[in-house]
Length: 321
Image (cartoon, rainbow, N blue to C red; front, top):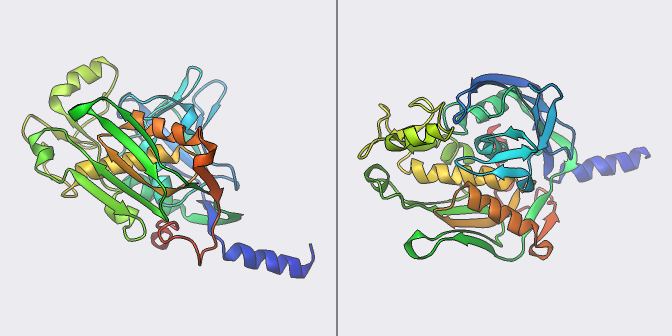
């Protein structure tokens, strides 16, 4: 390639939205929300087009589990990647943080089967990733642009739950909940975010997972919530929030459902150009929706954008990194 072609290549790449990784390795320790086990998490830079890859390095022979919707083997209270008997559980909060910062390529090493819960939100992961620094890579970022509406549902009548992806020139999410609990009903039961106007970091990242005291015994008997506490979840009795500091957002419950949905949808493999709308959806329905989209090749196309013509909001929170 001669010098003129090199200059033209550089110019072309500079005007595109580019893939991202992190600049340097960073590690942290924590506990799994469901397993209760101590785990060390290390995030490392990855080459362009690698994607997001989890590594179980505690095993005799380390196993790689790429983040992909078809690799989800369980969705009970979390999104769980599975390859044979090897699992990586509760990936959704970290996946959501990676989406929020527009990170395409990264290696994630774990010394146990579950991603640490940290404070129950994506906030700690955002802090770690920003501490490691973000690095643009000389390869155009690829998006999945939804071309026609895809919808999945469960149940009937008042018990119906549903989620859909619609064509949209950007990325937006709308979510409604109905838990019929005094503490939740006293807050907003519906929220919308459009990343053309809303910052993931400011609007979504700090919303925590939540649970109910009267369900703890049954969950722990089922091998779940063994690491849960007031330090990493909003906890409620029959009437009120038990956390001394209360809520971080007036609509923290529904905002956390949006946080989860973003992480679940990023398991599609690329950021979306779409609008997500859901009512009472969870990890299971979100995964069904992702798979339903991928199973219909005529429902989407893979696109890249020049930075000056891309739909507003697709550059994520680069300006805050």
